[in-house]
Length: 560
Image (cartoon, rainbow, N blue to C red; front, side):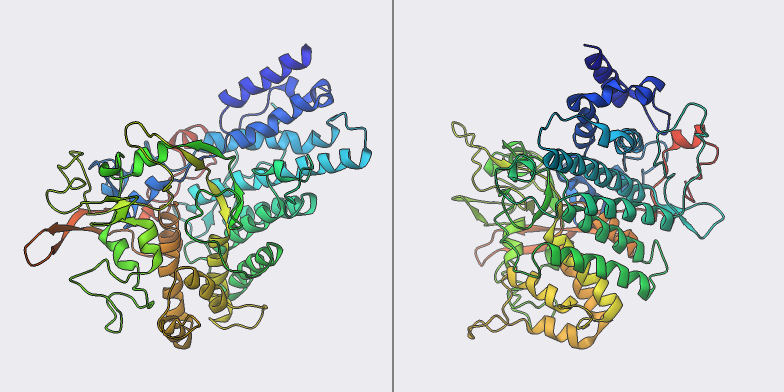
């Protein structure tokens, strides 16, 4: 009974403790806690429970990718981002979880699992400690992503205060922020420990320790992909010197992860966002069945709220089926039929006027069911709705109410491929020969899945536009990679951070389209929806104001 009391005591502190406070003394010293696997594993389980779930689609409202259907729901982008009310990150959750992961890392090998087979007991202990190292790296990477920046009076980029031990009551708790590179090294070290202790992938069998039942748990491949992601950011202009050595480090990490995943292979098709077994998934949250996502993002004519409205800016990024940008005179683009002959990603990611979805025609033209003032008084503000990540298997009609598999992909192959392409291009150019495949080889896989074909008459797919960018060299191919990254990862929360790490403009005029039906065809009038207003210092988010008040050594990012 006593161990149950200790377990609930820990859970109580888990949900109420904050920032970098020490753990309660009794939790640090009790031996009974570690003599029962259920109580000890409760700490690890809650590290999974505390993970963010669901795609951070709202982050695209702070970029030129989309706006919310309700004006003002993205005040951060409209000039109202303040240090006292910043929605970016969750400092307390990250540090609270890290504290308990530190406890598990120090004591996890002492857990008694009651497994009679010593070898299997050793595997289980190794796996669980490896998971703890990975999860600590994950939460640290979230701190680094959300709070890295340059403090007032210094040009050095700072990260977060590194805490890797169980703090005692008499320890110094007023910790300064470590440098960005120190934080990167710490995360990479934890990833390496996880890679050492964990299976690279779970084998898909029925074994309780190594089989498919472990889907959702950390793996060695997840740790490799996370390290590659962190190294890519560290090489980017906003966080480092963007030196060749840093890009080489990022490219090598991504290459090793791709090789460990099975090598450079074709990517799964775009219809598998709801297939947990898609080989594009590296680390995902546990699967569940629901239709709340479609209720939120389906257009009104499909009985949804249509909350996310993609911008004309994003729509213009999608090339035509032959691979050329729509403003290229060689492309198949027709301004009188702007939604014809676009690449496959456009049709899978965007609801547009006259789009037919499960027998329902989307109507965003003036007076249509999905326009502002239609079935939903808000309708679309841009002329578009988000289709990506929704499932065609969900029917919200009255009397239907079907559901489909849902899960959030924390780490996937598409991002990993793009991370390699960016880093390898910067380090070695489009056709670098340092690895068994190049940046151009990887981008060819990305474009092949999109159905790009500049010469449909021939049996083999051609992508003349990409070939031209390869020949043009590193700078042209950099822009090519960025454009495809924007498309491939839209609505997944990446662009907010990408434009910051690239040191690109934060301010954009968001555009939309008004479509008027006429006897001679539709008329398309493009207009400004809203203007985003960010000050230069907002390239870096603020450290939580409340923490800077109680920790004198915790420097705030400049401007905040």
